[in-house]
Length: 395
Image (cartoon, rainbow, N blue to C red; front, top):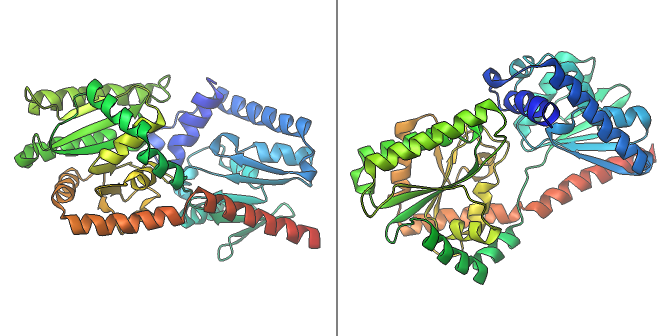
């Protein structure tokens, strides 16, 4: 865990793929353990299955080398992998000294999936710059090591029916009453909501700076907008995550001291574990959802908020730097998380948006989220795998 998960996975690959090379921490022991753990997973797969008669589906950045180790033991294996975080540009990826081994490991897959076309293009560029491979950017095919690898975009969705059912449930009603009894939620005015892991990529510090600017420059928002921040502690063994947590706590305390009144607390921070029904209630009752990551492969919070909006329509405020913006950007309000003043102005725009525009935007968002749900994602991935298996059998 220390060297494989908290080390290489989350202090090398995570910041690298989120294009934050300053936070990459290279330690030789991290790479040694990452290789060893990937091999252990590959050995476990080979021991428990016949990879030549199975589809092996790897998930995410923790297993960049495992496909190669499986293929070394079973050359006929059908392997595929979905990379749940962004893939960076070549200039960024090259900063990792193990870039060639990582690419070689991933190209042991037959099918490699990313959220967006631009992540696919970045990956193809990295391969073209690094390996002796024939890269067909038009079709997303790579000929390497005597095999053809397909690289495709499969935007991840959510279970919209489950989210809607939760939002409509009696349990959500009960949880909302409990939340109001437990936390200083407002009796009047609107609720801004942020739901995030406590991670530097999520832009929580920048979001709080924008809200502080909002309450300073738009006094009419005071006591009219309350920000509810649901955070989940994440990777707290890593120094950078400890720094983020300390900064966020300091910002929340300062903002509440500066603008709070005897009857109103501007920022309500919730770090307790909440059941899914309570989270559904928060999504349902919030007027504005702020998704302002500095970089995000997709970000499913935006989609969960939309799917949970079953009554009065809210407004989604969405960073242009998250993958979900490619699908939802036209109907959300767009912000750049580092443009503090414009961010604050956009929140005020969301607050004062008339009902008809809110309804129209949410209707379009809901249609997009429901069409591109988790079932479609699974069908698209498995259909591509099936096509490739059929082609293999016909050769």
